[in-house]
Length: 380
Ligand code: ACO
View 1 (cartoon, helix red, strand yellow):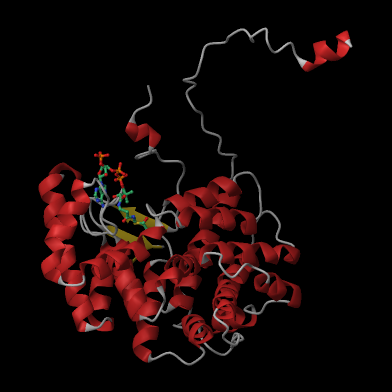
View 2 (cartoon, protein in one colour; view 1 turned 30 degrees about the vertical axis):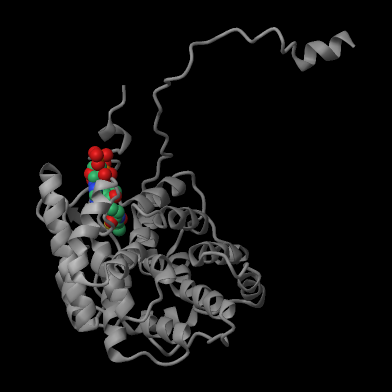
């Protein structure tokens, strides 16, 4: 009988990677040998793209050539834009992003993926997402500006005006911190898809579908719902206890790998303390403490800590990202991690094909009331 740990592929190592190191017992995250704390301190998003894709830092930050190249790759062709404009207005933005991604199929993505494939997707996803978001709201479309850096351009296309420095800094830090994270479920999906020698376009679409589940990237908007439901910190203990009594999960807590503090949660807490409204931050801090106490009391052996999603939600809100765009924004940040993994996977690829233990019926006779089409034809 296959046990729960096998079903969840706990601790199964399926290869090696030089991209990011995640250590759940030490609470470490490195990109290409640099700690996430150093990465956030020293690099903007283009610097992170350079590091993850090519394995080394650029000459300086931002890496000028890459900023220019990403800026040049942002546009959609007429038919690609028309495809985004044809997506039903009531589609969830993550589905719209995937549909718009499919519209890039005419660009001739092939196998193995190359650096241009990766950079095209990094560059163009914000254009697809903001075009859809503004169109369904009846707002004029804002064309990408090749002169702006990546995050500023995203916020400008989203809101139709240049973002404040506070919002840009908060969102850029978020992009840096979410850019890669080892063998998380969406990256696993991407590598599995790639192992069939499919295109980066197809594999990234599969990865996005995985990302949006609430046990992965889809937890963030639920964190905001929880904070809004609590409203006043005095109500938090009762609401949290009742949710746990109903066997609900508290979104933004627990992680398969981290059994100590998730370093990304620590960084995002610090960023939120500067970027969020003080009252909002205080509420989040209070809810976090109450939730951690309650989880530790009920499930001490599981070491459930704050995960990346809890303060990511607070930071995205403070950067002016509407909750329906939280998961798609995660996808924009993660697209460089997916791209780097795609190139690494293709370099040493072998088709991934696990097994399932058969637990169904023994072989049995077909009932006689189904004589069979071929037999019936022959009789006629
Ligand atoms: N709140 C309440 N109970 C929890 C939580 C939580 N946040 N996390 C785990 N548990 C409980 C589960 O209900 C389960 O209980 P049971 O044994 O009585 O059925 C038990 O702990 C084990 O749960 P698993 O899902 O097997 O544990 P795992 O370590 O694999 O879970 C996960 C990791 C899925 C992230 C989980 O902690 C969770 O559901 N958290 C809430 C959702 C969330 O925040 N997701 C974002 C993750 S970060 C990211 O992907 C970017």
